[in-house]
Length: 380
Image (cartoon, rainbow, N blue to C red; front, side, top):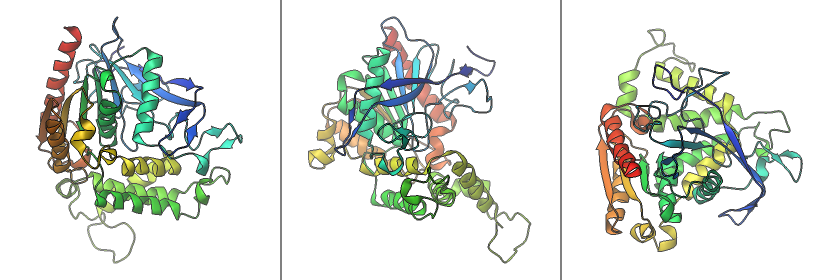
């Protein structure tokens, strides 16, 4: 179904239940679990046109389209996915999944622990990028997809795309790693820890078991989101949009909101604390911290990437200082050293890390051109 705006139209989420336990990198195991996902387009006869979209920290399965009962809930990458768009649903069968530990339908800390009949809360095990990829592979098996035409992700999603190429080399034809990195820098780990401390020290957190207390660590979530949001933007972008604009036109000599940027950040923090789960935020940032495919290869990223058989597209954005172009070039250098086929683009943008969600024309053109290649291979 399409509408006049080239959208996939009205969509509905699906749930897949898995009874087999999932062994985790931490040594724990998750018993029966559920993955919530959405699909767009149609799977072709030989099931060769499937694309997996991996979400970033606060993302989820709702990647494109709208819900019938909430036409304002537009998918977070609707500008990129749909008929006639770069990820063209007339040519591809697109799958979006809410990762384990999430708070949008997949099993996570707010889900009921079958062993206790209470929300998992603090007892929910730490999950990692490899754990997510394993669960996504099980979903692909359920859908009858033996090989993805492409696995695509930005930021934390790009890390998943990279791990897919290593862990399941025969199941990925193309990996698109956008605004990402092969591991976090010390600065990025530091940002994540400050955000976690804001949540952990909120009196309403209750050690992660706030559900039973009918509480929400809203203050901690709000601060974590405000901090994170600053790192997703660029200085030029913030300056262009807000500058030093005052809400009232003059100084108030107090600690309430005076500058427009303050108002914007507080709005973003308040909105986020209304819908996101604090335990999920902790889990997602830890998954970011732990990702390091070269760790088991003595720090040699090229050696870690050696098993990959996919073709790669790596893209970065000039104003992204959280996942800077240098980090993408590090990935490209290792891929070349490992003998892999890789295309790289460094795109001019003022949108900072959030640029991978935007519609800068060079970025859209790049995605369209690369996915055209993928589509031709599928139909060859």
